[in-house]
Image 1: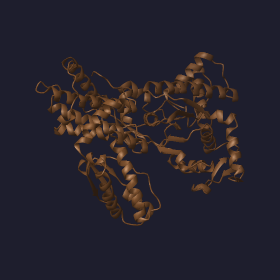
Image 2: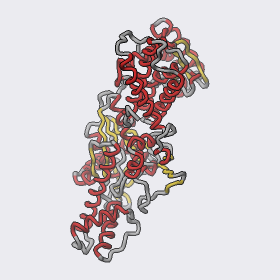
Image 3: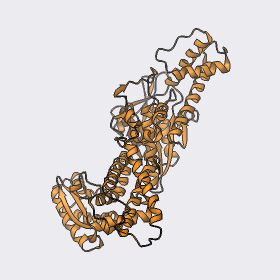
Image 4: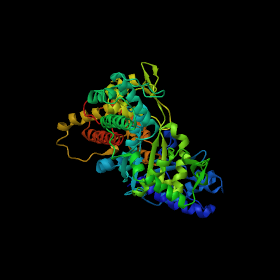
Length: 560
């Protein structure tokens, strides 16, 4: 029996009765999550507080008490009664469920039967199309650790969406024109001019990294002293050469990290294809465009933005939001049901105007999710590494990959909520000890592989079915409880678009396994039936660790 599904069904019936009892008009989606402390039970729901928040009728405690009583009556009369032994209420009005041992024992058979599909809940978006746009760093320099964090988060979210049945497209939006690209071209030309012996001052805000010198030398080696002047033709060549070279580096670094994009969409394509003008025409037909001070404005305040936004400046050039509106319209036009953007913290103030644009396009709020990935602070030997992209002082993704590898990099980038600042300790990441959380989890997987290899010959002739009821030790029950949580953790990671929840879960599961292994022998001569049961237990732990690591894009070594 899928206990969570049955519990949701019973809760839906109970909420129907609650609606009539308290004359409730607004009913939220029912969610179940593991409570923060073991003493609070095995699953918890905040539905009573949500009902109060939406309806403001009876107190949440009163609603929770009715739900508990009605639910108890329903459960006791059906098959779910064998799996749930108690329902309690904890302040302010959480409804907590305590499972009977049978619920934990049966989870082993479910994992054994479903394998890679274990935890795959049916969700409303199944079969629909989602596009997730992330990294999208300007091609003006190598990817930094901040971009790398977005790459880890974006690719993991994509994997989670795919697991739950979404058809996902991963896209990189390439800002290949504008002021920053012009500055890139002039920076490269300045270094080229140094090599050629021409007089050309380095731009005040130019890019100073060694990579600029490398690109300039490539051009010099290829063309010699051909470009004595920096006119429009030369500007276009140096800009395009720089963008192409840097983009190739970006693609290589992402590929080595295990992050692949389905599309790279250049802004210049939007401009040349008239998609920006088409988007403006749509807004103008809706009466959402006006002209003031020789500029073209978007009535974004009509859609709850704090002020109207300029689309075309008085000098005739586009502002940043102009191509972004066209780009998002293009995504909708391509048939995507859900647009997910992952931006850096410097774009936080940009959310309101993008929301206004999405509403102006006639799309519901739920069709666009904008996520902010906070900055990363790098520490080396306990000292802060200061970074400045334009000053050429930064830790690149390539340096991190070369120093600690893709598995460790991705894991560390996912260890905190995406909206929380991340401190990245390079020394810890490099260590090959159980203090390193990646090593700690992967070692649990490898250790189980070793146990199973050792047991293979010994158990070859044993054909009896393992009996989970023999698993009664505290450490065994702790593992069973963690295995039971896995589907809820996945659903929570999906609903909140937060891969770090899988990281936290894996650390807890690995800790439970290592504690069990330190106290008990899996293959024991004292009891073959107990050996079978413990082998089933550790096989299931291996399956879940492997499944979860795949979702966050990390390998599952069999030997370490």
